[in-house]
Length: 399
Ligand code: GLV
Ligand code: MN
Ligand code: MN
Image 1 (cartoon, rainbow, N blue to C red):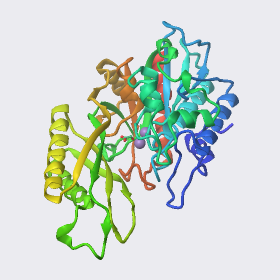
Image 2 (cartoon, rainbow, N blue to C red):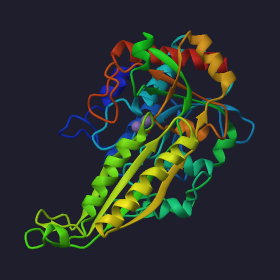
Image 3 (cartoon, helix red, strand yellow):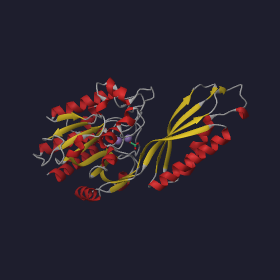
Image 4 (tube, helix red, strand yellow):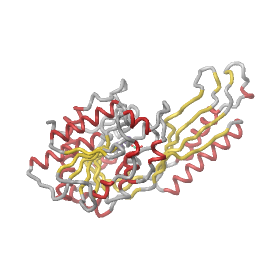
C-alpha cells in the first residue's frame, strides 16, 4: 500500500497525461473510470468500504456509516477530474492527502469517535459538460437532475448518455441521502495563487470563495467568402467577439474576466464565420461587482454587435454566489495549525457543500502560483505537511 502523498500522486501520474505534460481527465471518460478504480483500490487496501451515489460521487468510509441523518460523519476529500491540460494537484492532492491522513492516524493508533468519509466528487471542473461542481451541485440540490442530465459535451453527448455508457442509471441522479449523515466537510486543495508563498507557510486555511460564474455568448453573423467579400460588406461575429474580449479586459479592473473557450462555425480559414460561441468566466470580490462586470461586458457586446451587423445572445450556465466558510470552524483550524487564513478566486466543491454543513478548506503552498496548467506545483515536503495538517484536523474534529 502506498502511503505518502507523493507516492499516491505518482501512482496516478500517467492517467490522462497529455503531450503538454498536463492532464485531461474528464467526467465519465476512460480516464475518469481508471481514477475511480484507483480510488477503490486505495480504499480496499485500507479496508474502507466504497459507496457511489446516483451522481457518481464516490465515498470511502472509515468506521460504520450508513449515511443516515444524525450520524455526523466527518467528510474529507476533493475531486480527481481535471480541466483540459490541468495540473497534477488540483483535486488529486486532496484525495491523496485524505488517504495519507488516514494512514498517519491509524499508525498513531487513533480511533475516530465518528465515521470518517473520504469523498471524490464527480466533475468538479465542469470541463466536459460546462457546469462546474456538477456532482456536489446535484447531491445538494443546487442544480436539478433534469437540467444536469440534459447538458451536452462538445460531441453532443448528454450527461445522461455518458453516465449510461458507463453503466450508471441517470434516473438515480439528484439530491443525495448521505448528506444528512455528514456533519462537517474539510477539503484540502493546492493553492491556486501565491498567497502562502508570501505568508511563508506550507498550509493555510480558506476564509471565502469569490462569487463567480460562466456565461455563454453566441455571436451570430453571416458566413461568406474571405477573399470575395469586401470588408465593409461583412457581418463578422469574430469582430464582435474580439471587441467583447477587449471590453472584458478593460472593465475587469481588480475583478476577473476570461474567455478561455471558443467554438467557431464553420471554422474555416477562408470563410467569415457564421457563429462564434464564447464562454465568459467572470469572478469578483462581491456579488454586486460581479453583476456590474457581466452587465458591462454584455452591454459592450450588444453595442459592438449593432456596429458589426451581428447579433449576440447570452445565457448563464452556472453562477455561484459568494461563499464565506464557517467562521468558528475556520478559526479553530487556523489556530490548531497555526496557519494563515486567505480567500480564493477559485471554485470548489467545498463552496457548494458550505450551504449544507459547516465546511472548511486547507490550502497547500504552490510555489509557481499557477493552476489549471501543467506548471501547477506543490513541493513534496509541502504535500506531506498538508497531509499532516489534515490528520491533525481529523484528530481535532473526530477525536
Ligand atoms: C475550479 O477550479 C474553478 O475555479 O474554475
Ligand atoms: Mn480547478
Ligand atoms: Mn479543484
